Amino acid sequence: MASLSIRSQGNDATFLGHPRGLAYLAFTEAWERFSFYGMQSLLVLYMVQSLFMPGQIENVAGMAAYRSAVETVLGPLSAQALAGQTFGFYAVADRWLGAKKTVVIGVVLMTAGHAAMVFDQSFLLALLLLILGSGALKGNIAAQVGQLYAMHDARRTTAFAAFSMAINIGAIFGPLACGLLAQAYGWHYGFGVAGLLMLVALGVYLKGLRYFPEEPPVRRDRSQEAALTMQEWRSIAAIMVMLLMMVVLGLGYDQMYNMGMVWIDQAVDLDTALGRLPVAWFVSIDSVAIVAATAGVIALWQWQANHGRSSSESTKIAIGGALTTIGVAIIAVGAAMAESGKVSIAFPVLAFAFTGIGFAWYWATWLALVSRYSPAKIAARMMAAAYLVAFFGNVISGYIATFYEAMSPALFWSLNAGVCFAGSAAFYVFGPMLVRGLHRGAAERPFARQGVDPLKAF
Image (cartoon, rainbow, N blue to C red; front, top):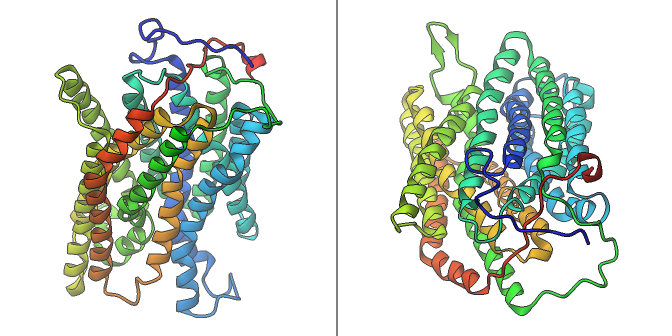
């Protein structure tokens, strides 16, 4: 196995007090999210208004049949991509190619997927390529972020917060650019620019290879690996219980990207003096809120740490869930008012602002928690498993969306707000006990050496 070394915290601070590799990993994901969220913001409306219209998909008969497909497709797209990472791509990375090659292949597959989305005929092929490509990226990049730090390095949580902030900078401009192009020139122009930006992500990642953690030699034979200890199994069990609570907590946020787009298109007055606002632009409000809030929470968490007042991971996650609940509840209020006519854009703006701020509180904290306390020998797999929150969230929110027409919009969004609140309350009550168990079983993890020759690393 390649030698690994732990570096002191004082001699690797080259990017805002963090290792330089963090910058390259963050901006790789920023460009990838630019393209993905740009595409995602168009997808549901593209199917509703174009692809699933009579004459283009002949086997879709009637409103109920194609509306049900529309409401669930966004779930499978995101969910299958994330499940692919957990159930298959960790094996490709850990046992065959290594994380770096797997990430590069993922970027290439996503580029091809966006290109295929330009043509109606290759729509299903495009979804398959995007699922495979995104699955190859997610857990492997996040695992490399965690490997930049020794286990008890206090910078880990703020590193994941900065990582999330950079990602959402890309997510801000993706829906804006793709939505504008789609509205001005047609759907396929929006999808096309998303593909071009995946090539930018590939260039950034390749340039940063020398600053990423060194990978041990790939081991296809697992028979010689030490078995997990009982305490490590307990840690895994605790993380899995928290994962289930995270799924419930985040359902409202996931629904904003699913039926939230349809509700805005139907119930919000989007006409302005300069023309009709693209629905896709509202996704960027969420990302703006995440970026702004992340800068604030990093400063707050640093101040708390300096004064010995740091909040626990479970408290941070519960606060994020409560803020998300408020955002979804705002949509419920707007939906009730929309029964007598279209409502102001203030409702989705405020709603996405609150859900974005909530996400800034809980998502980086969740990734840092899993990265810190996962058994070292399966760290990459556990980081991939952390994204099961989004997998189950997208699947369940897609299923819940099928009830949209059977319920009033106000009742539908009230249900989503209530579910989100239940998850937040569960984390507030049971989270501290689970985190204390992780603290007791924590073991130091080796820190991956940087400064690797890029040719050898790849």
